[in-house]
Image: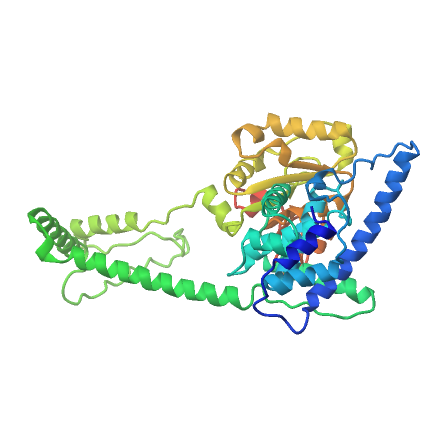
Length: 481
């Protein structure tokens, strides 16, 4: 429990910081201001709800904060949020980016559990836990849980439990890409700008350490692989270590190479190219000028060995047609998560009103592509509906088409909303590698946040962004039509 007395006891046992920063990072000032505003607003809301419950007024929001019960304290700590964040930074020496990533975790948690509120009773525990997890994710060197517990004013056992609680509430979604990191930095800076203060957050997550370390790791990997190949090849061709069977195998391989070379090599000596036989130019000639038939002059015949060798070469070098699974993986650029709209892409119907009036129908031509996508990607289907009956119609149509039994799709990954903005919010929260939609406005809104998008439309508009592709249908995009 992070009470005032406990906090002072933990503080007295702390070691001296190895390095005290003379200036506080700007991210602490920005994050403190944003979190303080959030906590103040939520405290007022929680007081109003508790007052309504005391007066006997039924309120649907009375169950606020159930998901964050593990982070609740008996009373609010006496230390302020700015001082608490400064204390964490001062003693743990974590990078400033950890605080932005910790804020990302808290925001994700609130999106996954919208019935929860960050209030003064739980904000300190949330901050120290999220910053600790962020430090483990992005810092090369970090302190253990016991040290963070002493800095945060809680016991080691409690911080271990809070860490597990946070990870399960986030469904272990603790990876933050550089694109998401940049978007949250811009959001926090915009919040400060609205308050009349222009501050820039330190951005050091992906530029310096990650690029240099990954480059060094790649160089070391190439060097080790080259040394491994050198040892293996030297062992293979070392005649001192070979027995009679190995020597015989190498000799047989050499004979096979020589025999193949003699078969496929061209005849020795220069040969004149036989002239082409010209067809008679008469008005009644019906020969096509673009005919691919090879005319062999009389008296000249190809040796049967050369013909057989040519047939072997042609068969060997015949292009292999890629499978649909290979095409899907190549087109999706090895993407692992895909979100897709149902109407106009998977279903025959193109509007929620059609679903409400008739039965939903899955397009048979897109079914094979859809099942291939589920083999390689985490696929989420989503649609705007007008009523619960429309949801049931869509689920029944997908089940009858065999999407849930033959593919890797489950019913929990079919999402429904009542507005177009809701579908856009689904995509923002899921952060897919690809999004497929028929609404150009949504495609344009998501172009800054999603890596790749596919716009399904019979008409080909001007390309709005470099990461937006256009196709008349999903199956045509993958070359199935």
